[in-house]
Image (cartoon, rainbow, N blue to C red):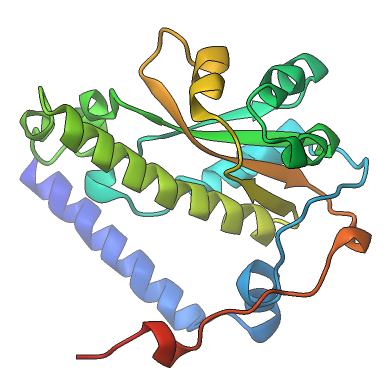
Length: 217
């Protein structure tokens, strides 16, 4: 078993070294696509997002790091009219048309039973005792890391040519009652996914400068 683990470690190290040898950083256009020039969108074309592409987005998302590889995020893709109607019950009025017009709305949720899967995801040692019976620690860890995974999801979608628009103007309790009743899942935030109608965009809002919010000590 030790030799096997050592072999896996060596292969992982070689893979990263090889990757760094092939590419040191993304180019300006690639960075613009996913972050520097990317925008949140609120209006959508009627071009559909195939299931296979959603799978590709998830396959990229899942590679992002989480605490102890806990991967607590769960993704529910709402596409049907019936599902959108249920989701609309939770929305602030300004967000209803944004969701109804999007090809897909992802509910980024987190699983409060995530820690039960740690032997599969973190096989080095059993970390379940760190969470068992500790509701607040479970909630904090699940929420924090599912938020990270939601951000990875947005960047992954952009990297694959999709547009996104995250939404926090909704009632989590309504979403949880409609979609996760009787389960250990709780909603974090919503994210529309599709191909944007850029004619609805307005100017980019200001951002803080480095010196306004950053400090090096």
